[in-house]
Image (cartoon, rainbow, N blue to C red; front, side, top):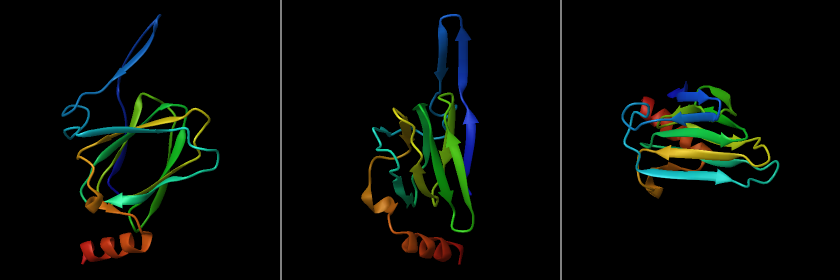
Length: 135
């Protein structure tokens, strides 16, 4: 599975904390799109898709949520609840986001502009895509 959780650069002093990340240094791709998910109703799930080419970094900058990752062979749940950590999610990984705490904000850095053709939104099509890709 092409996923990796990393801790970003952090500076701390008596006045607070500052976390920073830089494209092409901390993020292995040029950032072409930034969006964030927030005000998710209690018990709701988001995502339910994979990407053919897109790379992403997911950062829960406030509160917490859990990311279900699935590469077609194995599944993994990753808790994001530290604004100085990011989760890299590569192409061909199904993702679902759930368990959002009240006030959670999930920031996403994406390698490409929005392109609906890059999305796989049906899980059975995702499984076929993975099988065909491995053949």
